[in-house]
Length: 193
Image 1 (tube, rainbow, N blue to C red):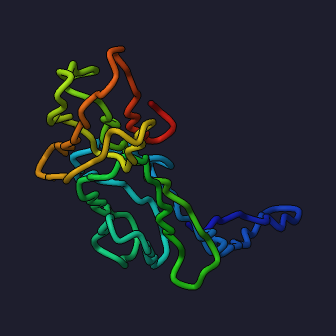
Image 2 (tube, one colour):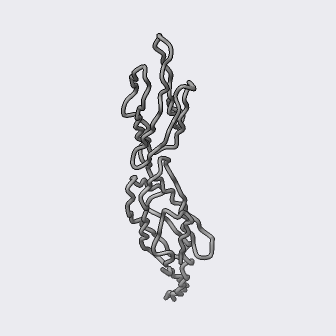
Image 3 (cartoon, helix red, strand yellow):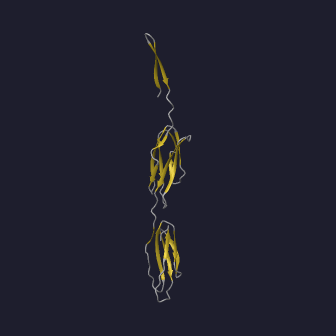
């Protein structure tokens, strides 16, 4: 808004006003976002982010699991940030850049998404086998990578069937000794035994 003032020139019997009008300064460019961090659940979600601005702006994000719309605008507005489900076991994050179209102002929006809980467990922890040998079946529930190690050569893994759970089949050789024996089969996943 322009401002005005008056200068008065006064003589013996009268005053003559002189009016001065000054133009307002150009508004400073601004661009602000109403949040700096978004926390998304494992299942994904859509969130609105408010933009307060007096300039044209653009949005950039290179995370494949996020989509943003619109990717450009002018003045005040909103963007929708959509996160797809995170089916991994690691938390993930990305940065969305909201900047003035001329690059003079940049704001960063950090998006963090939770991960699935890590699952690594055995249905049973031990098996007894008769002296004649036989087969045992070990069921492993997991959503992490793991490996199987056998501590004795009289146990060998036959096959692995994987559906939602892995079932490991082991052949136990006959025990020619009159003494019982034991061995350990280890399933190792993400540093756990």
